[in-house]
Image 1 (cartoon, rainbow, N blue to C red):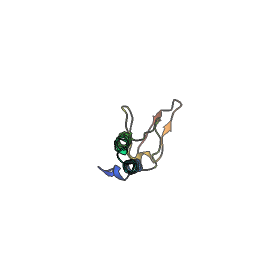
Image 2 (cartoon, rainbow, N blue to C red):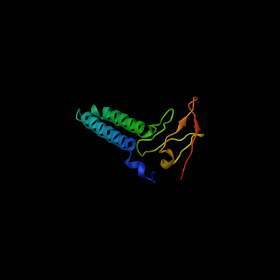
Image 3 (cartoon, rainbow, N blue to C red):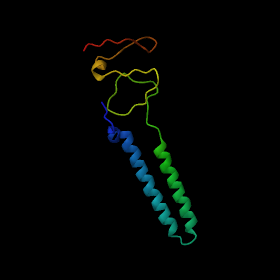
Image 4 (tube, helix red, strand yellow):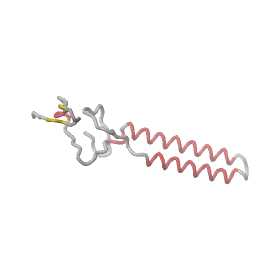
Length: 113
């Protein structure tokens, strides 16, 4: 079970942080290279900085990955986007799997505690 703040160790979070770091470094290098051009590079450096900020904002705003149709088994801990009408069961209940009916829905779920 995820504890508050434990998403920071998840793969999507690490990927997002790495992307933001890479975009920040690339923007800083672009600004530095533009400033090497002399006075004419100042407006170019401003444009490169603005583009870098836009890229960082786009990465930061990217949504968490989600499953379009759900799954019977979650292979690792992580964050989940839950929609209205979905069910979440404890791992000990899901150990035996689910009986999926012909319509793709769970016919019956029995739990023995």
